[in-house]
Length: 227
Image (cartoon, rainbow, N blue to C red; front, top):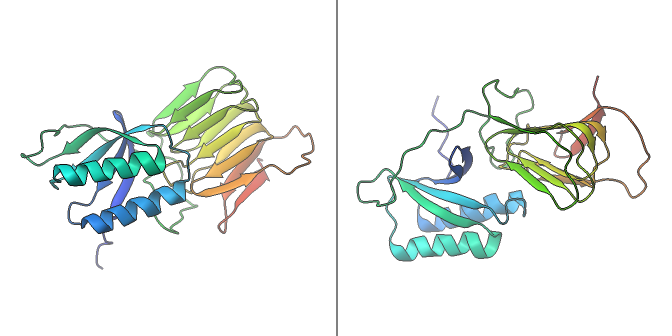
């Protein structure tokens, strides 16, 4: 059985931040097209963040680097903080350790039967989020010990768990993992996003008090009562 081809670009969370990993064998045209496809699927959820650009053994000249930085910044609001590579000619070479977790998915690939690994990093927020507050966990999951009020937003590479009322915006699987879920003791969101999928609350949303979980099924976000 042949190994699956390596993706041209990957987004992963590391301890030093989000990282865009580039296939060193891909051409610049392939890299640019893959970035545009990947970012289009993610929407604007990562806008305003910084990232590291991981070139591996690839060496890019100044013109190519500037082009990629401008593409990420001008089109998607992302700022390249550091260039990472394992080439001896790369002055930005550095070492880091990847956080274990569910890998980002690509294209229409979906995995519904995977469970989040026990060793995946989880960020805990131990207070209620008020309007205008944004909290992100791009290395793994996020758990909110409180409410997420209207106008507040939570973003995680893995699952979003709200041990309270979710009335704001929640984005799980922000790096593309559509097997992520959103869970809340009282689910009354302004907007839900899982990977590239998005849904909004109905115009007339009935008030309810029940524990629910949102997940992706058949290319749509569904919400079910959690038993």
